Image 1 (cartoon, rainbow, N blue to C red):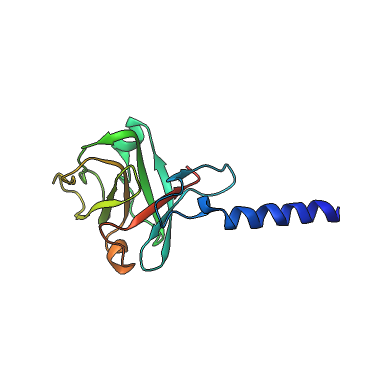
Image 2 (spheres, rainbow, N blue to C red):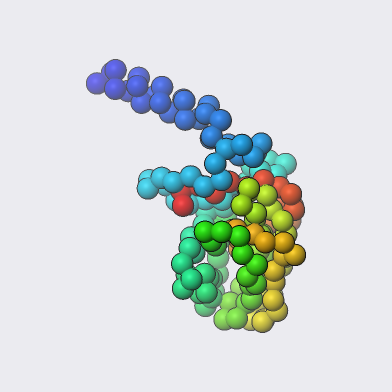
Length: 157
């Protein structure tokens, strides 16, 4: 049993030290998959900030988003995923909590961040196409020094 532990430890070390483990330089994968862990978005700002997320990758999931929820844990959110670049807008119809949304390009760069008021139909969309959007409690991005041009990696989606 001891050799198995050594092999597992060695494999874990390689995974941590692998260039694909991080995305701060933009060279690692934007999306990684693992059935064992909660999906997360990692923002590479002045320090790495993690957000546990639910995934909305189908038209029905993206349309519903975080509607009808009365609360959202401080480190939770939702990542919206498309197969290609889009210019879709976000609104807050039937959304009861104030949210902020970060729009992310296909290369993992934040292209816009907007605050959204509950129960409004205001159209929120960046000036450029994007591939991912992340909704979090309003103020999450500013409190964590996450700004336009920060890099992002999305894990376990």
